[in-house]
Image (cartoon, rainbow, N blue to C red; front, side, top):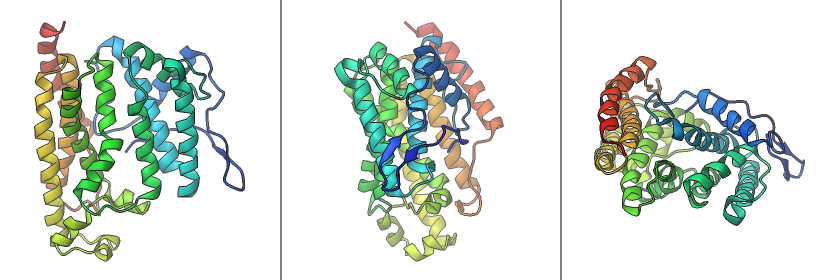
Length: 320
């Protein structure tokens, strides 16, 4: 979860038709569009940093552009002051603008400055439309699907909401490899799971329950218990199970660190360590994430950066 960035107002008619997305037809100059993406990226607070002092300079702008794309979709899907139906339509307009941007090998004429910046990144790094499209589908899913029967259903959601981010990072660092994408999925899904268990209260405020129903049933915990935000022993036991599963996925994702650009490996370590710090915080507060939202403090982030510094120095010696 990030601090809110003011993207402006979206315009919708009384009958629910989208007439304008915030930011459309502004900042048509590419340099201005990329500066806008940088501003968005630098306004955030996350469990991990988007870019850091170890990110190669030639990649920073591209990562900021990708982050801005994700944040804007998140704004449309979570923060726009409309019904789920209208939010879905806003996201559909965003998807259509993406399709225009991707037309003729990213030579179209999108209306939004973020997509102009994305065009430049996609052309330079050889990124297809699909991972961006998948992220929009995840935001759309949040407007229509509020409950998950089992982990397979939740994993499918992560296939759209989380895994494409890892694929985008791989493209930025020059990796177009199916095996590496499959490995990155372990870490990306683990990050999504950690975020879900961190944000159970915030998600419930939007009537979203990501905890699989079969996990609740196995522990004798009902939807009524969930809606009442009961943090009894059953809750702690079931969340302990889900935290353990997320930890297993983080552990499996570590293989990618040995097989990708060592400078990317440092970023992957930061993402993974940030997510695992969330899991550690959940454990530390006895799995009661209803009364207090677990967070990764800025001090903890600093220590992770110092830990990464050692890895970064080693990476420089082996970078091509």
